[in-house]
Amino acid sequence: MRITILTLFPEMFSALNESIIGRAVKGNKLQIDVVNIRDYTQDKHLKCDDYPFGGGAGMVMMAQPVGSAIEAVDPEHKARRIYLSPKGKTFRQDMVYSLVACEHIVLLCGHYEGVDQRAIDLFIDEELSIGDYVLTGGELPAMVVADCVARYVDGVLSPESLVQESFSDNLLEYPQYTRPVEYGGMTVPEVLRSGNHAEIDKWRREKALEITKKRRPDLLQD
Ligand code: 4H6
Image: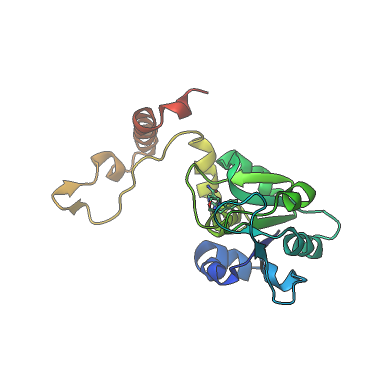
C-alpha cells in the first residue's frame, strides 16, 4: 500500500524511517512519499499562506498549492484523501482496518490556522482528528495515522500479536513482565511463571477486564 503525506514541513517525517514503519518500507510492503506542498505553489516568492479574510490571528494555507499538490499525487482521485484537523471525526482503531484495505491514502497536514476551506471542499474525502487537543500542525497526527496503518501491513506485526489484539477487542491490555523475577522488591505474579497456559489466559482476561472497568468503563458499554 501507498501513503502520500502532503506537508509544508517534510523534514518532520524523518522519524518514520525508524522502527516498525521503516521495516515495512524496506520490505516494499509499504511506500511512504512525503511531498512538499511548497513545490506546487504558483507564487513567484513560493508563498503558501496568506491572511484570513474577515481578519483574525494567524495565517491560512492557500487553496492553490494544496489543490495542485493533491491533483499531482492523485490525478484520478483513486486515493482516500484525509485532512488532519482538530475538528475532524475522532480517529479510532476500527477506522484503521478500513484504511488498511486502501491501495493509496493521501494525508494532508494543515499548519498555521489550517487550510482554505475551498481546498477541503473540493479535494478532501474526510477530516480526522487524533483526539481532543490542539497541535501546531497536522504532521504529528499524520504520523499517528501512518503508524497505525503500517502495523497491519503484511509482515510488520507478528500473526500472534494480531490474533491477540482481536481477542482483547475493546479491552485495555493486561500488564506485562519480563526478567528479572524480582525488581525493586516486587515479584512477577506466580501464575505467569507456572507454565499453565489455561491459568495464564484466565489471569490475563481478568486483569484486562479489571483495568478496563477502572479506567475506561465506556469501552464496556457495547
Ligand atoms: C488543520 C486545521 C490536528 C490543522 C487547523 C491538527 C490537532 C489535530 C491544524 C489546525 C492540529 C488533531 C492549527 C487549528 C493550530 C488550531 C493543525 N491540531 N490548527 N487533534 N493543528 O488531530 O490552531
